Length: 381
Image 1 (cartoon, helix red, strand yellow):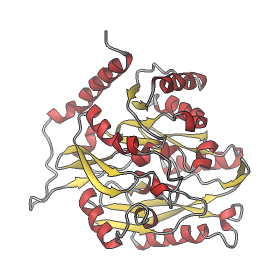
Image 2 (image 1 turned 180 degrees about the vertical axis):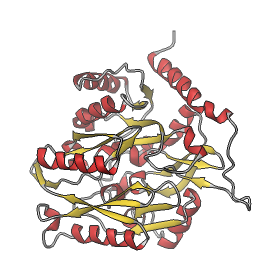
Image 3 (image 1 turned 45 degrees about the vertical axis):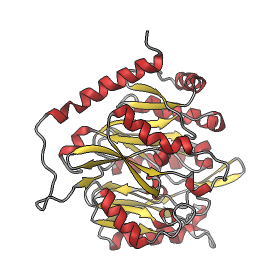
Image 4 (image 1 turned 90 degrees about the horizontal axis):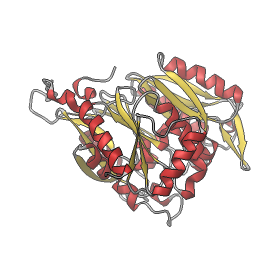
């Protein structure tokens, strides 16, 4: 009799086969007239086949409540694939989901016994691209954020996760020998990528790498014609300034950029974060995009530290948006209303993520979205 992981993998294969049935339909050629290769990265608001995450192990166990809430919400809308490194971690995950009021046996929850080192799959997980009419995975290299959290942080298993996901999904995997994390990649689904050069150009990640070479590489691997670099590391950001804490596309022509207000600590004199956000907004506007300033309207104290209530680290899925919550009813409610305006027609959820935020990230950082096969046949909307 198959083991539980075997049954989960079989069920996932059946779901993937149904989703991939569209490939049997007549395809629309994406090749240009001169026969050049065509590549596109679907935007996050396009249809998705599912969401992936790596359940936290014992060193990150404090994040389990956040993960359980995410899984409960996501499973109501689409497939949620959970990677677990050990059987005991899967048991802990099931218990946490039940405590959150969810069902660990929900038809949309698929478990994968795949080794991993951390709970931040946005950064070590794959980038999905549509290349010449097929979905492919890219495995950009991962070195645990350039060692920013300590040189003893393991990352070998994390670096293999895109290959493992390729084996599970049956999608081809392309290795890219550049260190970069998907949390620093913001696509409009058509022709533009926004990212922070301070992360990609970090010499701990890519020594000797130049902006000119980076722009050429990014255009080649992602098929974009425009690369917009912002620069600077917000205070306390150990990722060296991932773009998903600074600027986010909400449609192909509009970008939401974090904005310090008088009620935030980043507005204070001597804090360079305010200047970084302002410069990012100006750069993005100069690149031809409409900018909406997303106000940071308060602070929260947690474990002896003060954090600004920055809500830009949101996850978009089929019919929903989930973003970080700061256990501040006033700013949480105001952020929910704003995000409902950014993504009309989607249900918006705020979940308390203070332990994650104190560790360097939020909802978007923990998750990795897989575009639906249907995104092969059309551009972002």
